Length: 522
Image 1 (cartoon, one colour):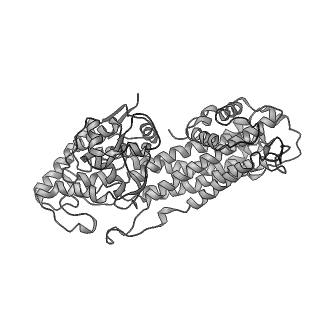
Image 2 (cartoon, rainbow, N blue to C red):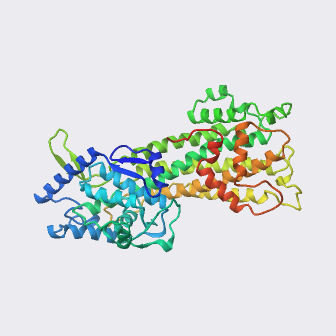
Image 3 (tube, rainbow, N blue to C red):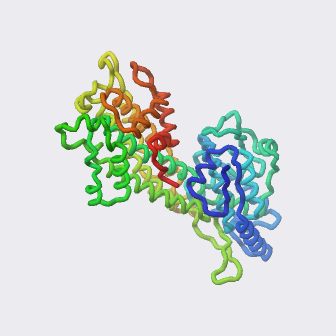
């Protein structure tokens, strides 16, 4: 049974597990986290009672931070903050992303520096456990003073407003017909609307959780795709009658990038002892095209980017991203309420932009490999477009066109969002990260790469069917797994649904498991 303890370090794998479970079996708050929450809440309330001016507690927000709010209006201030900031537009974030948002928002608050009450964290956990999925529009955050607009939509059902739906089974999308008023969904789940205390509305929306949630799930998916690229690279190499000489460890000892060496070892191991390779050992060609020969270098560079980004995401998952913060004095005793900028998402936006560009190279090299099978000048004896009757049949001709379109779109999406900045809030928030845009672009890139790899898989499987010798047992298992989603070629047909199903399986690690490889991210 899945058991997640918030207030203690979370891993990307924990986030992925919660994202795709519905409802969540068990999420608890660590005992020491409850103690921290109680301490910092007491300190904050003491400062408010003493008449101290604290941003977002008894002042307005952003450019209105110089406006003092009367004590009897502090609760209304927090409700108004959620209502006024819920101006997101566009399609709703998927159910896995919204579940991740609830988890991460509860977790960062449970770290104890926000000054919220333990019951607020309990409320978020209760929503998640009940399967309540708030409707959160994708667009509206620039990653400045937190992912304000989407997090406001996330929080509104907690106070009985906004819209949500009840999820009882795992699903990727949100049925539009299932969305209902937040108060109605809370009641059906047996929960009551929350009355916000001073600062709690601000703490619900001030942070990088949209950027981090979308980025974490996309980074995990990218890990599956990198492993799959090595596998399909090996399958394509063998089916193309290529050589694994370029994976010789002595070559990579001379350029010892860890990711490059990892790919070289993996590809070499997958093709080792192939009967198909032995069947053409007398081939006069001494070098393969770059799309085969340079797989370790290209795939390895992407793996290096993944490690960098996974590290940044792991830090951000367990970071305090609110403002202001209630922090222990050093040296103590006591606490101070301190304003800072941990809500700024540059720490994840820049890495996510890097990964989007890196993943695009997986799409471009995969497309080049599959194209070599379809061109009768480079396919080493295979019929044009892998058709049984070229001319009468088009075979996989258009599959390569689709792969090209997807790769080209990835190139367009690789321009970094994090280099942009548009001042907001009357210039008070004068430098913003565009983190959510970077994360959503990465998510689109990895989805595209999954489809390109699915096309390569289908093409390589067809090429292997046309060879007279067999491949290795592990690659044969990969071939068999591909055939569970894409049937053998028996004539021209629409492949769209089969390729899309295979892309989902690729993203879920199906080919990686068939090849008996471990997950890239733990």
